[in-house]
Length: 285
Image (cartoon, rainbow, N blue to C red; front, side):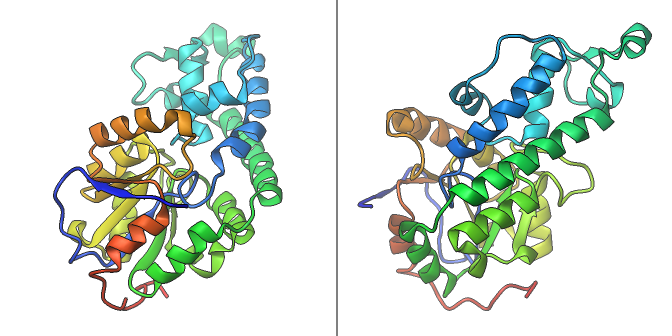
């Protein structure tokens, strides 16, 4: 891919030792196939609570990009006024708190049922992506070059099992080890999702990467917001964003705090490798 990188804010590449890479639609084009599989589960989830107007995979993608299924399901439940177990309403001021009558009638979303839906969606999407994704030389070749000079880590809202399946299918498993794969879904004591910065803060602490030493690469507004809130300079990556959405996404990523915008891994690698020094290796390997 012939691409380019545009700087929109000043930042110093010299201290960078570690690239903190979002996964979906950043390292591989997984958003569309993932939402194809996720939509079936999402619509069954909505139907369970009486919502009869199904979402298309494209509608779901636009609503949920950058978030995991857990947060998407809760956001939809709040929007559709589904009564929630009080434990699920934290941080959701618009949520309907379940009454005793709701609980008695089983018209309430409780934490245990949500976990069942999360597991179902994870298994279906993981299997679909493992069968769909293939290695992409336009990602692999620049990343192999970058791996000689930087530690590569994955920082994602998606579950670890899903990420590892995607890495195996795309050939990235040789570049990003499980030890440096961080999931907002299951690497933290309490599951969360971007734009919460918790997963970036956790990754930085685990890797021993100070704010000036890490560079995040993200395709979504939620992802840029998460990384920036954790203190990391962030490049917005348009490589897998649909062409008709790129202009709007570029503006949104800049507004979210991105320091640069790239439309290919090659363009980013070309800039970083001009000043890179050999990497010392991951502290976790």
